Length: 148
Image (tube, rainbow, N blue to C red):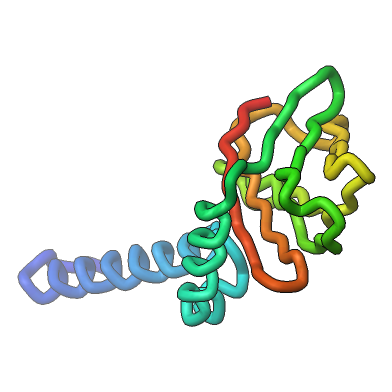
């Protein structure tokens, strides 16, 4: 069988190669992992004004949350103005480069307004510690940058 190469054959080969490359790109893109900051990205975006209010409340405090690092643990120290108040909330260790390495902890303060968090389960690297808490009256939010 003898096939002649003319304009029609060239255009047909080009279209077939183009379609195959588009199918390859689509398959490749479906296999890529999407690293959003949080899976509930859009609902949290709608409630962002609440987040801004929490940051403002934290900035009006006399002292910020203190962070002390020792071997094997991190100690969070809350300001003395929360003494006698019931504090609840979460501490998120947000691993900057891979969301699968994030860690979340509930706030459980001792009588000195401190909480120890063991670093044994944390991967070495850069973290953004996101502390979201409330004292029954107001809600607060503070971020601390940390490298382990």
